Amino acid sequence: MNTRFKIALAMLASAGLGAAAIQGLHAQAKPPVYVIAQIDVTNPDAYAKEYVPKAVAANKAAGVRYLALGGKVTPLEGTPPKSRVVIQVWDSLEQIQAARNSADFKEARKIGEKYATFSSFAVEGMAK
Image 1 (cartoon, rainbow, N blue to C red):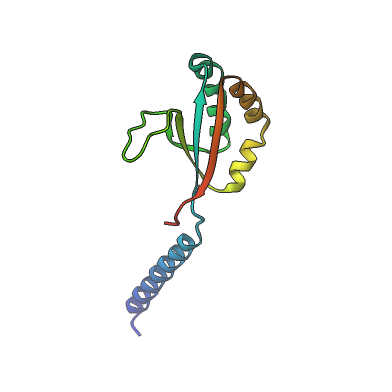
Image 2 (tube, helix red, strand yellow):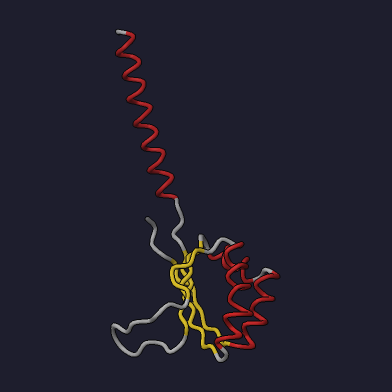
């Protein structure tokens, strides 16, 4: 066989193996976990000043990504919640649990509970 042909064949085979390996890694990726929280705030000024900065910092240090952080809620069907809505994205349920058990989050939550009532749940997303 011609040396150039052998090299070209080896390069083509390597590219095919690399593409297959990447597809395998993507297939193994875990789906994200979303946390949806509804927060009934009784003292908006104190909540925003004392709680929000600490809670956001603790969660960001633990790896959260925010999709919505108390923005305007527009009703599409039914009655919209009167409370504040927060949507977070996490890599896993274990990551969420570790964040919620951290000292920083627990300290922030003690402050938040003076000014609000929290209701939240986690939903597993879809794998890409």
